[in-house]
Length: 131
Image (tube, rainbow, N blue to C red; front, side):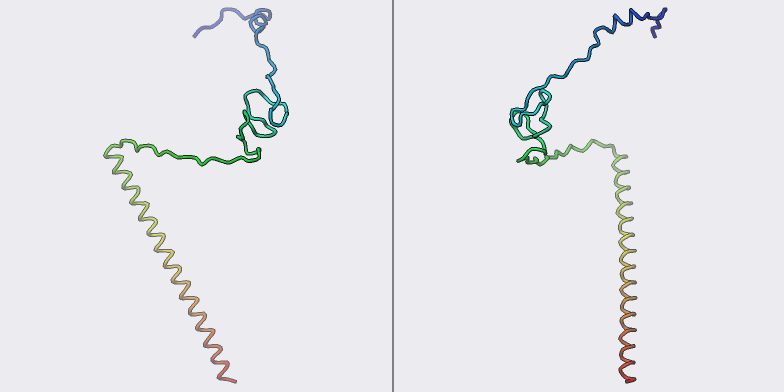
C-alpha cells in the first residue's frame, strides 16, 4: 500500500480542496399549488409530480395494487429436497400434536362445565323437594 514520504502542507491541502464547493439546490415553483420545491421531485405540499397525483398527501390519490411475481423455485439437490421434506414432516407432526392437546383440553373443560351444571341442577331439585 502506498504511504506518503512527507506530510502534506496546509497550502497544498487547501489548493487540492479548492474545488470542494457546496452548491445551492435548484428550486422551482409547483405548477399546482405554487409552493417552492426542489426540481425533479414530488411537491411536499400537494403531493404532485409533473401534474400527476403520486403522493398520499394529494387529493385523489389511488394506491395501485402491487403485483407479486413468483420466482421459479431454485434447482435443489436430492439432499436438500430430502432435508426440506423431513423438516416439513416434523412441522406437520408438531402441529398435529398441539391440535390433539388442545382438543383434549377442550373436552376436559366441557366435562368440568357439564359436571358443574349437573351439581347446580341437583341442588335446585333438593331445595324444591325440601320445601
